[in-house]
Image (cartoon, rainbow, N blue to C red):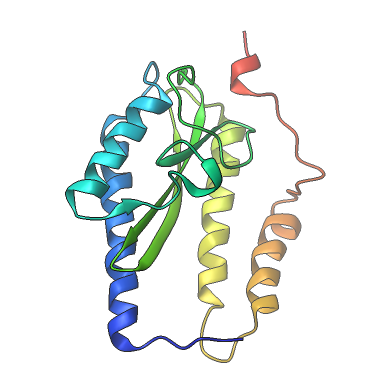
Length: 175
């Protein structure tokens, strides 16, 4: 079932999403090798709470942190802990969710830290560009399959990447 939002509801969703961007911007300012997942989690939670909102992930089904933090080949929903120490060459995916005015905002960003191998940076570039290929196909009257096809075509056919074909040594495994 499709639930249409009013202009006021859409504005509240936008405000929640903008707060996610603010939290991720603050994370971007500090994230570096040697820092921990817990450190960036603390910063994001403070930004969210300072704006009268709640971290959407924290406490959801027992999830313990504000951010989902995944390093390198870790897929999603990693836990931000003191034991998670970022290293030079890591790529760190940070997912942030906010609940504000009864509406959620949610977004993720991948941060390359330090000296990341060229093939990993190329993969980051291709995946980032694929997002915009999908956005270009997201308009009134388009189908979800058209959006997915645009992304898949760009990633697989243009760049020969696939979740089944692409493998790369983790930067943690180097040297």
